[in-house]
Image (cartoon, rainbow, N blue to C red; front, side):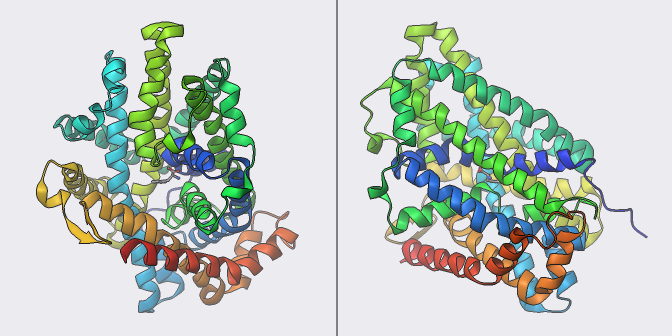
Length: 467
Ligand code: PHE
């Protein structure tokens, strides 16, 4: 008989760990940039509706699956659809996807810690130079920072569910909230800050079109860490007495609140730097925003609070993003890790070492794909462009497979596992959910329009990305 499955120590620990997964780079920069460019308050409204009415039910489906089977995603599909090869493929997809996303998320996290170290070392002025980012990502320095990130993630995951993942979330998440609120308060005292708040919140419905709507859904889906098997895996570390629907609501709420508040940090800072900011100038990618636009803005603070003051603000911001990224990275690597342990019976340490080697190899290859090596930089050609290894990982796994995995979870839970079992799983431990209107909604939507919406997003992405 093997050892009993590891479990989270408390409900709060589970909520913080799942929220730690959800709160990531997407919240801190992706969301504020998307909201500003796509109609401010109008985007916020659409985003919030997607979180509540599309993403939350999918999160419940994932958590219910994991808690019921007490297995990783691959093990879950295999256990509930034994001998069914079709569903085993879905299981494999939900383990390979997080593995691949972990690779490119590692690369970005490495850059963040690199910038953090440089700011602490007094280099803010250098980072504000537009050429620095390109030079930095093509320098061998990134491999040193990669070793640091790898060691941190390894140490957390090696601690296990309760003493590693949960403990890290209990320290990092409150620290993140405090830094976030502190920075927002500071930024709101800057001149012209409220021009940014206004730009962020005042709705402009004329900007809303089909691609903005589909972008809002993708952003919400990614932000809540769906389609990556994470919520299945974390759910599998829960006992039957845990109120899953109540916890899922808390996770969705925390994630959305942090994204919203991050906008109150980023946009006032942008507008106080230049009150006439044309939002088209805002970099259209999160990466451009963090690594080139924001350092320039932080440096400009030196005229009011001095160079050291500006460096402290910048350092706190990068530390905040780093904490957000680490808890997400931990969660995503735990998925293949749990699957490897579950499939082979090997212990945590051995599984982590194997995964560590594989992810590092691919992360090194991705890191060379910004110009260091020609082969990885011009890896393949599609949609009329040369794509790097990094681009391919983002296009295929983040943009394309994520909604597909979400779609498969909905169909699996409702039509294969069957809705009566799904509902019974969620009722256990949460008497308030049983028979509620919310339960009826979740049950109905997961079997009808949510998979249709996810299918449309999937088809749309395939059509736009590859042809
Ligand atoms: N929710 C994370 C974010 O918003 C996404 C993520 C989770 C990415 C886990 C990787 C791993 O950034």
